[in-house]
Image 1 (tube, rainbow, N blue to C red):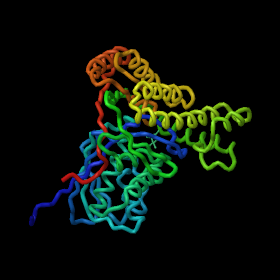
Image 2: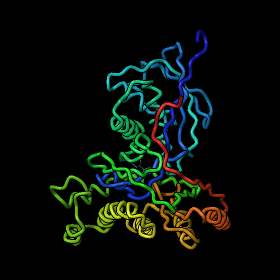
Image 3: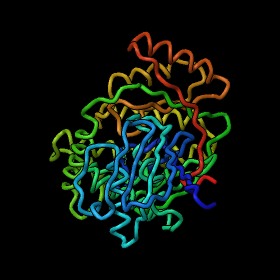
Length: 367
Ligand code: GLA
């Protein structure tokens, strides 16, 4: 249509990780689902040779000359996720055409539901504008944007889930081979996410510290490429020579990988009790061995476990605030939501958002 700017709409989902936390950057296993909350980017072509960005969540219109993007410093704003992606696309030798991207996210920022990956992947699709990359390359490109430009040494889980999500299925991802199997969620289980509504400041520095502590733990196992390759027996043999912190971080990783595999088997068998038990064990390990939980998350997990129809509960994502993920009987979810909100409000004076999540499709163009 002459004159009217054509708007193209791209979407990428957030994710909730069912089990397998802080294992992705150690080559281990994770099991996220893509969720209904996500990030939408509407792209329109412009004349001026720049990338223009607006967000429904942040004020102002930002504009960057296309020619300046490869050598830009990071800005410290939300635009960094988009600029990081743009740089990676350019680094592949692909062109970025002048465009305005209008971003609107339904996944809350900093909630542990992967708002950054949703923004990266939806922006990447908008910037690629129909040029296709293999899915895993798209996920890797977005991970590089976050690691190398934004500066968080994250694993591949969030970007992978945003790209590969499937309706009705969880994604059992092997972060070493970067391949996945789809896992059915048994009947009789609903995934309910509860948001603490807090994000403690130490989040990203503690994340870096955990990555470093895992490297330190790994240095006790010459010849092993990642903590994923260390067995419990090997850890026990090395324990006497290891400091307490790297030992605990390694223990979490080794046991968490076993829990993901157990959870996978239990999901295939439809054994909700076993799935729930493994979620709780995962939480305790994140709380005590990995030390990435916080009082608000522990309160939500402990409270959930006193309520009817709850199979299991744990913190999800990086930690230090954000959300818990709960596996609950569908018939109990209304009462669960009422109770957990009332008790959290009474204890912390905050009204926690509750999201009922169904596994959703991965990123793509919205027609
Ligand atoms: C963040 C990172 C992921 C993963 C989780 C913890 O979401 O982006 O790569 O490490 O924390 O499991």
